[in-house]
Length: 397
Image (cartoon, rainbow, N blue to C red; front, top):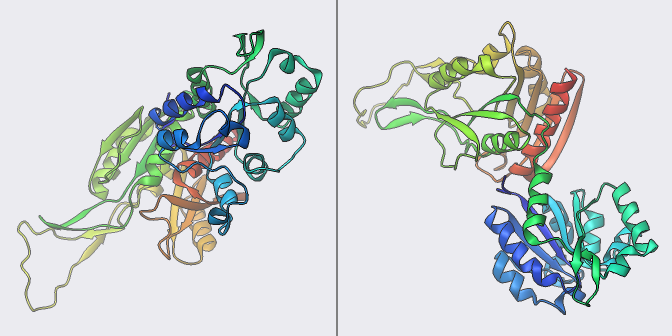
């Protein structure tokens, strides 16, 4: 497991265990996560912000009413950014404030302002942990689906022995990794297409489009995390293959078409993220076409419709299409959903520099009797949201 491309908001509160959080930061970065640190005033009495800035490579946030960041509502942006809010150590005081809904500093405000999951690693004196007030607060947070990890038992800084030690950084890392590995599509075979295709005009020129492949690669990674066996049929991109994914590289639409048909019989789910060229040159020159002052006419012929052919199979997989639109997004997506007899279609706007070749995306997903909108966020985050929806509809079907 890893935390590749996960966005972790790491909260540090005022306990002696804060010194261990420096090592946790290093481990999170090593596991592939992007980490932003928020410290309470109490935490700064134990470890300096400069330590976490050096380890994370990001400025450390400490104040709610920071004029530099709040001019653009920085705390709201930070709350939306996080895939996971991880608080280590979480003191008895902070646990009480979170349970009662207080928002009197940056970290507690972020917890209230975010829809992201929250994970707490408590750390306190063993008697404080055993107190009924603390246990009542823990129960309240668990009822709100906040994940409490630990504490461990053992020697404490005050000289006591008992429960209240923060889990070791390696164990917290393992718990964070497990959070993203849902098993929602365990033992399922998923075939995904991604990226553009290139249709050659001559040996040095081709027709293509602006697709970067980022959405398809993010979906492949999310599918592995959901427990699936993933085959990724990819056009030409400059992206690293996600861990655990079998990639087959292709260039033209016809190559992608034949590769998909070779693998489709084993697929439980097919997700057609690729921006396949609709047309290709009717003739490809064997030598470079020389420039002249004359007009040049290029005759085009249609490429095979991979998505429609998969959906039309006698026993098709659960089939998900994508629709990149510059206008009338819902109308065009709904028409494509019905015309191609898809199980689901994810539509996104691509005008005004949205969608293509960007790190963020927004989607409106349609199926026969419903729809769901996913607002603008990172492609990795929206991929996990979409995979959860696909898993839900696949299992219900």
